[in-house]
Length: 65
Image (tube, rainbow, N blue to C red; front, side, top):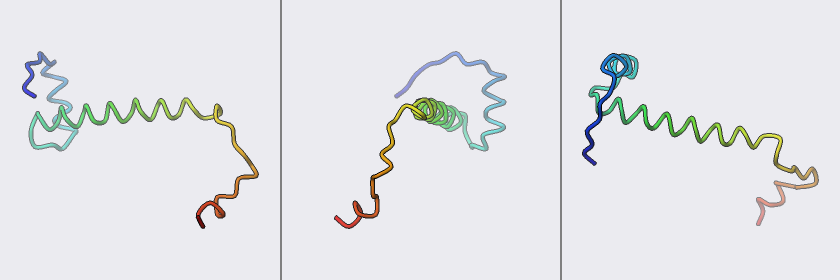
């Protein structure tokens, strides 16, 4: 999708240098992918301690189905 954005040139250049990507488009794509992944990881981390754990669950028995 073609999109016109006004980006901070210094920030884009820094991201380009550290990303190792060959183009600025690839740099922005990588940055967005990492942003989404980090936010999804944060949501998962917030679940720690909130899920109930069943100590009697036998995962090996479930594998044999």
